[in-house]
Image (cartoon, rainbow, N blue to C red; front, side, top):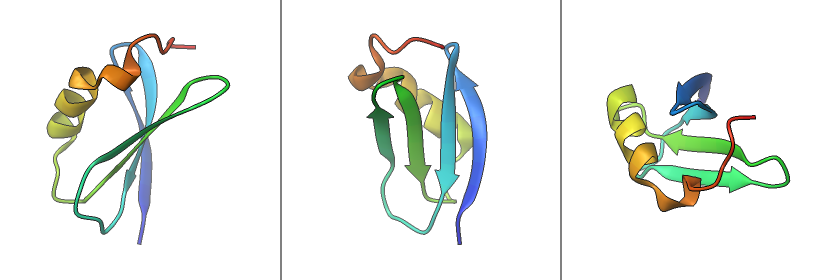
Length: 64
């Protein structure tokens, strides 16, 4: 069972997918730099935000 929502982190639109996994997965997809985070339901939205802000893969991703 997956639950999807869109959140904004530092001006970047992030697709947050909740699914039965063990770890947090962050993906940045070309060409527009779409950002997707897959997270287990037990991880809070605040924890997702903190993880995304610390992720070097988001350097250079525009908010468009």
